[in-house]
Structure formats: structure tokens, C-alpha cells
Image (cartoon, rainbow, N blue to C red; front, side, top):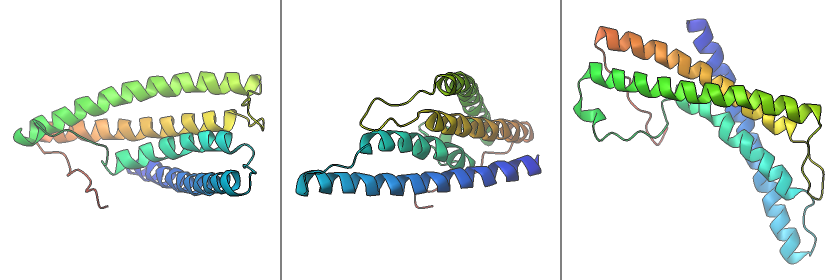
Length: 174
């Protein structure tokens, strides 16, 4: 399990770094588009389509990494007042429900990826930008998150059985 956890962590870091590059590219294209449109009367062709596709990379690229760091938002109204075993049980239920949801999302995203690949689906904007790379990144991010959630469910179950509390939530400054 340590081998799987280390590989999921490596892939998650790689995907979040790729998402960071996508965010920088999106910011540069948006700035160039605004400057070009307002000052030069010459917008960047395909800026909207490229920005839409990089959004998928930015969001789904960061999900598994954020889950691995336990950095997702958690409402702790009741969580902090419970004992360690109950807190681990609450995390187990939450992670299991998220696992089911994202497994369904990953399953459906593969169907959409396959369909988009078969028909060579692309945007209808100024530049015909293919959609299957963004759908591939959505599927990859969802599968990586499912793997991390499966690891978390196993770890949470072990903690609950031993009566240990969950690890601390990631700090906002990390």
C-alpha cells in the first residue's frame, strides 16, 4: 500500500504542477487578450477556448493533491466535539461517499472521452480547438482522486478500528 500511496502522490504532484503551468498559460493568454482587445483592437484568437480547456486542468489537476494533503474544506461544527473514533468514522463515511461520487464521475468521463475522440469533437469558436485533451485530463484527475480516496478509506477504517483520530486538517498557509 505504501508503494501505491507514493505513486499516487507523485502523479498528483505532477498533475498539480501541470495545472500550475496551465494556469500561468491561461493568465498570460487572458492578459494578452485584454491588452490586445482594448489597446490594439486585436484580440487573441481562441483565447476563450484555450482558457476553458485549461480550467479543467487547473481544477481536476489539483483534486488528488489537495485530498492527499487533506486540504479540502471541512465544516467542523460537530467534528471537533466528537471522540477520535467517531471523527475517524465521520472521515471514513465522507471519503467513501466522495469515492462513490468520483468513481461514477470517472466512469462517465471515460464515455465522454471515448465519444469525443471518435467524432473528433472540437469547439465552435474562432479556432477549432479539440475537446478530447480536456476530457482526458478530467478523466485522469478523477481516476487519481478515486485512487487517493480509496487509500484514505482504507487508512480511515484502520484508524477507526484502532480508536485513533484522523490526522490534522491541512493549514491554509501550507
